[in-house]
Image 1 (cartoon, helix red, strand yellow):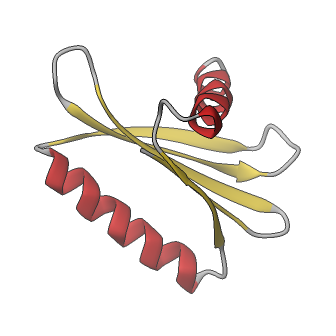
Image 2: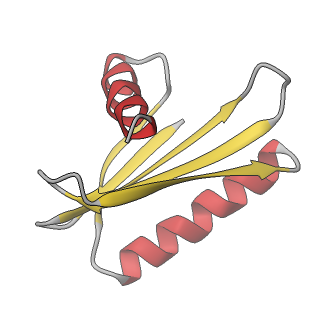
Image 3: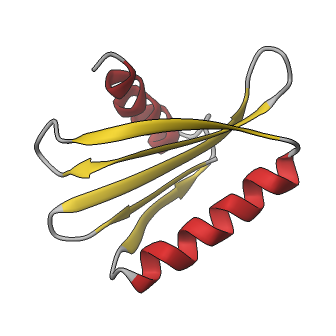
Length: 93
């Protein structure tokens, strides 16, 4: 699952996925649109429900900051594939 929020200048992207060991990973990327400023953080969730709870918390936080949701897709959708490419580029920074 990939969810992205934006303002006019900033973005936050969350990716919930399982790694090759079956663990649930909550990845959060943030930054300024059109620049290389930002960051990437990965958290290991105890179970899928915990990762979903973190996503609900993130949704509340971003809404309170004036961010609007612009993407909410599965990893294997065409939009999800594009978002995954963007996220993997951040891993290289």
